[in-house]
Image (cartoon, rainbow, N blue to C red; front, side, top):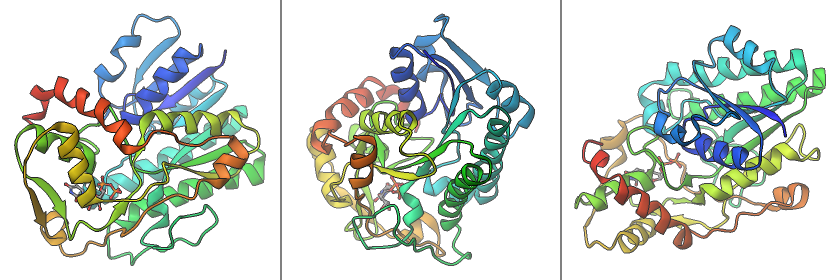
Length: 329
Ligand code: UDP
């Protein structure tokens, strides 16, 4: 049994991670400011003596230090995410994602507790050299395009973590998530395409495909995302490295729209929305995204196993059960 801190543990991926860690018998402290995370994502653990929730921000260095002094390792997932949110709030995005990670690493260095930093496939930027290997070059756009500030903040998080490992010996590891989906995906918060399509399909509205819909993503069932995250933390072989955590199947957004319509069982239309209308004129897209998973397979013994068609039904079920909340999304 370990004592673990999960920052962002009330969020979508974080709460699933907490479920798995509690099930594995660990003692968990969750730190979350509930800006996007939800109480009902962890309500089922309240009353469990091995679970504690602390409402607060990773920007509160004193609080972060106090909590880290009590644990063996830290899963650092607290971050500002979501392309639309970042485009609209780039200052807050960078402040939380960079300063928050610095606070975690600085405090961990005082105790030697291992830190896992949640990064993103966004760090590959607009590279189209798929599948992406962790050592590949990234291709970020100009600083006049706010989208890339998110990629850069996550890259800087990885750099910071690995710098602590090299300079101080603090064990760190980074995981690059590829478009996770599953129950609890929040249509209002992170606003991912799957949450939006599910909401639209269940409310009888057309699915909003941005651009020509031929851009691709590799959608990863959150169960796999969590297994890969724990594998990266548990292994000593990954220290000081980043790992792609994703299901290596590239899907176009129009194909996703069809899969969602089939999974929901609806005949709603698709409507094409120009990027300029969705994000403004200074927007650039990541055209393709697919992970090379050989490093995680070789070093962590981890491979995602849930295909999109196998993973969607549980997500649809969850969205159906929460239909009332969707109407206001
Ligand atoms: N997307 C879309 N319609 C939406 C929301 C997103 O077509 O209502 C597209 C978006 O342009 C991108 C893909 O779906 O190409 C994934 O978007 P998301 O925001 O989920 O994640 P990210 O861009 O960070 O991969």
